[in-house]
Image 1 (cartoon, helix red, strand yellow):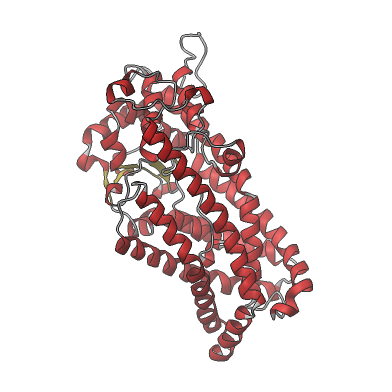
Image 2: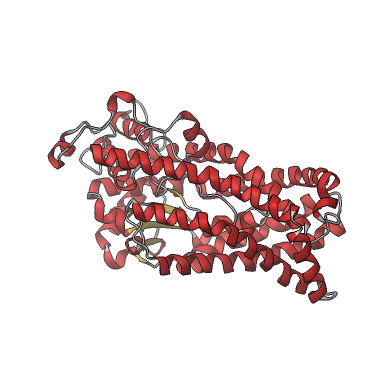
Length: 458
């Protein structure tokens, strides 16, 4: 459950500052679905061995529990995911340093300038795809390993042909955007050599807004199949409409969508995406299949919370503020690095095509170190949506607390949420609060019995 930025769309946005434009961003630890939170379990809550289905129904709803087999798989998978993330970050930085140090970037620049003649656009069309291709090839083994990992742990059912086609589409989309962004950047830098970071940000804002606006219509359908929720689950649409009426913020049925996730994954998810006319609530078919009606309503209530509380707009504003700061830091870091290593790398200056690789290097580092800030902001939004979801379904389901707690249990089990992440992993990688905390909070949140006013739904 969460405000959705798909990996491709997030790559598009970060391509504006040069991070994912070269396809080198590391995996983001959001759990197997945005609704799973890479969870924490107290030591005394370790997994019971050989739990039966009946025992599963009888266990305390406020505790996140796994069978011994599921527990061991969740631990092993999560550790592998964490290692993959940090290895991907390190390799992304090392790969850029390697091709700069070996002069690969300079030779690609020379080739583009020779073949492109005096046309900067033609040079961009030659240089950017070449650089992207080199970096994508260097990073592909880790991407393959990542997919093999989720297939091995039965979280993905996507075949290699389908996966490769998705990867190829993502690369072509990234290349297309990177050509435009790279040409724009190399036009602004010679024009405003000391303040290009500010002018580029001003140009990037409308571009990012446009991409984020159109993505639900034109990008997401390239990778998954969507249909109106009311076509297959009209009863769920009726239930959601009851929730929206209670919230006082109607969401028309045409903005409720079902995603056929089961064609590629066994994970569960639901999310809010888009803005303005493209804003929508999306529910995966796997979530509908594996949760009970009351549990699903809590999940939908959580997504409604993102919608009502304006998290998409707030999250995008947060992104733009970070983008401005990142570009400012990048400008100063670029000047320092070019003075120190520019000659050795064959980079003639900040207006050189080869300087794009240096910008990528800087932004990869900045993206890594800013991850805790980004995820901390996300965890705040997710907790607020948890509160809203529990409040908006109160009185509409038999027991909102137990329904919420059981919903988190199902999400954790299906997505192999980590039973014992360290505080560092939670701080650095979790976009959601630890699942055990969410589950316990759902079970205990009861302002009504205490005579207290709910926070959001009065």
